[in-house]
Length: 86
Image (cartoon, rainbow, N blue to C red; front, top):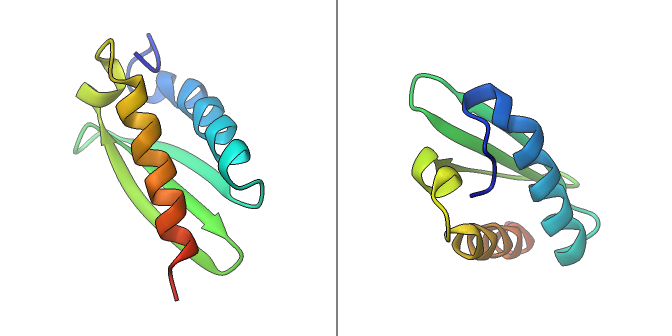
């Protein structure tokens, strides 16, 4: 479980988590996390210079115990995808 909080209240926890992972993977990547009430998903925005990559994590991914490694792999993969954007 990435955060015991729900909805917007979980954003600070997820922001801290995403920033920590990004700093280990590529210190130049900036992260931003928002909660979208309509879709009940967390939107993660990764930026590096002029490159931007946006993806979502579901509430199930964020709130289910044991899925932290999966979420971390997803974030690291997306950071690597950001490197390859033209």
